[in-house]
Length: 592
Image 1 (cartoon, helix red, strand yellow):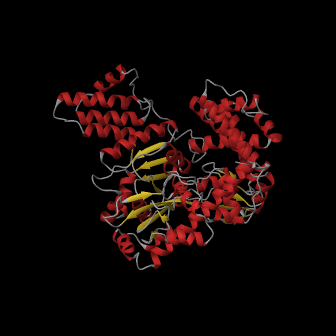
Image 2: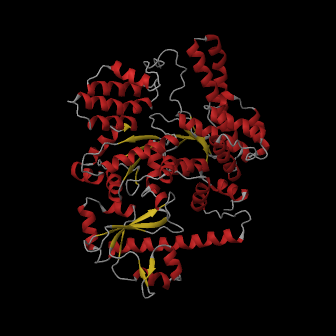
Image 3: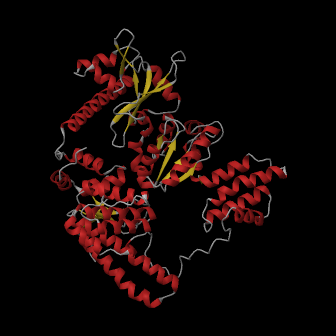
């Protein structure tokens, strides 16, 4: 797909009212030449979030999040660079122009745009029909009986498909859409005699939108026992791919970005009930099988994924499969223990929204979920069964970092439940090839703290490092110079240091010389290089991100000096840290 021209992207950036954009997520007040407010990326009571309206930059002095308007939309709306540019262009009325596009690609893009218009038209029709038609009264009564109010139904654009055979097809053709387009969008199909009829008839309609809110397809529920199956979806087509779809993602992403978590449930009404009850960061995976594409979308929305699937064996197995995929993506996955025989919608209807919030606050890691599951199925009165349970949980314990608090917690849990000495578990783990030594004491946050306040999350730091490397490629003139100023201490992981090394030696063509024996490094370099081709970094954004990395570098060195008791080194680093802070303050327009 062709990229947007640099001039188009610059015009989008110039059109953005940064105060208005950020103000939709945080109440801002003017302070000298800048605007300040509570950070939309982490919970805080004292404002540490700053917006520079002139340069259109933001920076949080608490969690370290920073960037320009496009980066803000990427972070708060869970969009990629292209999606963020398109959303801002729509919002501020900027026409985007593409780089030279081959005729076939242009034809595909125009066809997709037309199919999107058709599906959007149909969603609006279904929505009106639910609220305005007498035929849909039964559907309205059913939804009200599930405890769902009109506001949440309108927010999610729930609709109703009339029972007539061809109401949608006839109306769409009258508006200029062709039968072939109706079939391609999954809205109509041919009968045995060749006639065209609507795919969805006499059903409650759940619009399935992408992260930008564009409707791609529908889920449909029958209210009649004589009209099986109960649920049908839009068939796979050019727009809709069920394995990529998350119901409600466009409404959940802002809350997910704010809370740092996203809640995944099975069904449409689960999401509606939770959203109505205040858990607005919830989405539905539409079944129990979480795909890799869905997991990727969840991880873009938040760093932590909370899963609330049915307590039956299918739901539990689905969570274990999801855990394997989450580990590969470095996503924190937590499990919400649902009561037997109740889904989130039923729980909220029966016990209220606070009941689910209580389960949410008690969510456990996948390792603890697996351990508890194994212990629950064991006959604790039978010594042989307890031995089998130990054999089952040892691989789970072995998968947890030996120095972590979690390992110790799970060891104590197993020893208590199975009534075995902890030494037995240590012996089993040692036999499995891992040391079961006691966790090392954690550093105290008391005396000796460097006074930096709330530290940025590991995820935020790594994201800033990747973003800076992308910016260096996006602005070669300044980027090469900045790249040469980086050393190993500017990076929090060895992987990103290797990316830096590769870019330094292949700056003109980063995709040249990718290591065949290191696919993880090749994937990271490719991601940075491709984003660098799309993005356009301002000089101010590039400098701000470099200063952010420089501040993290100095903080790491300070922590090492504190750990080693090297007071002389600390004295050297304190003024360096303050100098970097002053430079950030000046760039953000903060009065000193």
